Length: 381
Image (cartoon, rainbow, N blue to C red):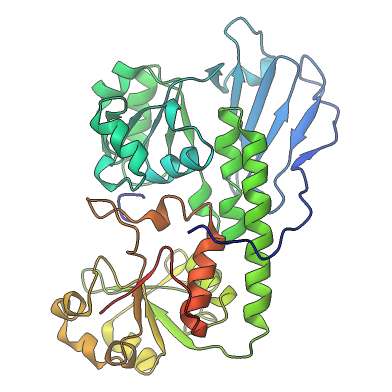
């Protein structure tokens, strides 16, 4: 989970498992050898992986930038082509890494790579009980917080890779300090993806660093099949209850809209998100006040993700006016607090990033009245 910010069920449909590795393609003229294979994501367009005889090249693309950010994984004695001299070089095999986000921990958990984690930030927010036990036993060091990492601890474990979000808050200064310590930083851009399946596919990005591509393929193929099945079923019900979400922060109610990740999930779960058709003015969110939200959502059927609260009383203690919403009065308020760490971290932002099928299943159950148990979500009482 990022500092601001997640059981399995029997799959109803298994699609034909399609490998994300496409046929071999010729390398470009600047390489020292031909590319022998490539991993091209099915949904995401933000990264890819190229395989050469002596090294692996991971490319991350940013909108507006002509050149990708390059990460090269190879043995110490490998000579690289000139065009990769400025790439982030990571010595293989990878046996030690550090994570500045619990989302990164979630990816490694799903990839069966917990044992590679040498240090992690936000340890009180980590939901994975096995990782928490490793932290308690000293096998994983506490690296402080993502916005204020403990550089001394990180340097002491000598990670071959440090996973970072890399583009928020004081990230620039943090990255410069890590580079000064000769620590290779890999910046994930998964949270920029607004399509839930595109975001989930970033598990292949993490897998490429630790040679877990086959596991990642298997996970994503199952997620894609199950997500598509649930989405198709919910859109056929014809019933689309009305939904709104969040609570004000410092007087401003940030409301997702349009193609926002959360808005997409609500729509795919067969609901009418009340700001779905609005154009964003703050990233992919609107900045509203209480009156603007109440005017549109007073009679909404469901209220989702109401901040860090676990009961209706805690919610109304923040503002007595919240009791005016129909969803509050009818008890149709749900939060992703069913799986929490001791420090309040939400597993939905840890493993849920890569398991949107489970998130969508929860939302479908909530919006369409199923009696099945929820995984990430919980009804506030």
